[in-house]
Length: 79
Image (cartoon, rainbow, N blue to C red; front, side, top):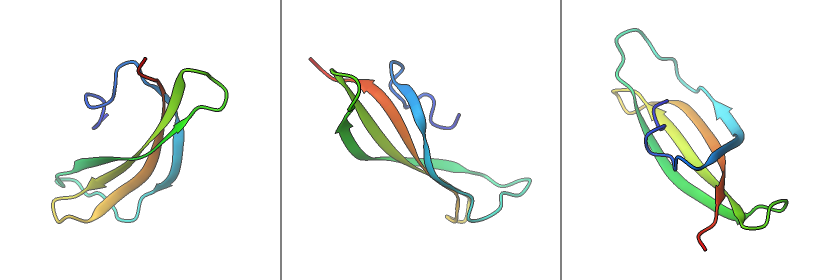
């Protein structure tokens, strides 16, 4: 939900890898997300489509990572 407005609306979630919660989130914490495109590859099953992997980090107000994952998206390639 923290990244929903940043993702291509035509992209399809393909799944998550390496999902980790290294630190707890407490009531009253302020969190923010940081997304980095870390990988782009052709989709092996669908011509004209690719897989984009975005590294997602959610940080608390002290800069500690409270969630880390790699979100894989299926996207249509530019023509």
